[in-house]
Length: 362
Image (cartoon, rainbow, N blue to C red; front, top):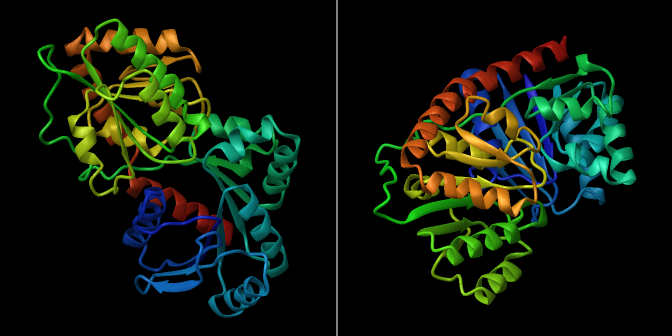
């Protein structure tokens, strides 16, 4: 089985860990799988072979003659039996090539490009409709996203949700120091500094917590276009003592931050199924999430609390609920670890994905 994995952006063993884990779990469980990864917004042109099973081609863009040359080589020499594209625009490009070379193709929707932008922008709606129409199969990371795609493509047999996984060994709270009221309550958020993550709401909530004399500290892990504005707001409110921005943290070290935290918050206005939340839950953290994307699916066992998006008062009161109840912090964390172990397993993911590939090839 030969897979052409195509995406605008890719990192192998990098920040976007679901790429690495998905590919590695496939190869571990099915050694007959060969994967050629093609990414076209990496900022450089190079080819890297990681093993006999993984070849990665990086290109600066797909809008040049080199892309055409690459595709001719790939389809005549590598001869993919499946094309697996992540995100809408890449899947349209590959969908047309798949029709020409008669190879079954997959659109893997992971977030805002498929469950948010198509419903606020006519341009993105048309692009998403084309992507859903031209690809043989549509994968989603949550049941909620599957329902959204049904608004774009009525064929429910074409759409399949498949949960990501978590590295249970890496994200295992061996030295967990559970919260007690005689120390500072540690809050954590991991995410790119972009509008949909609602960092300004988080900072405003922290100001209210400080003004009401709660003993807390927030760690923000990430970077992005809004970082300077967020830092300026923290300085304006004199919150430097209460909020720390770490910048980029290598994924190998990020579990240390989860282990020291007491609560994880993700008050986004749109999400798919955020890996950071899965990792936090695996590390026995209670979570506060907004009712968007697949996040409602994550706490049906009540290991956290759902709030409405852009609701400062709800976020403030829910954080206080955990600060005042150390037993709830521990109980919800235990519930979350159990739920993740049972439902977000990379080996199960690989089996389901391999079965989808096999059916498409037939």
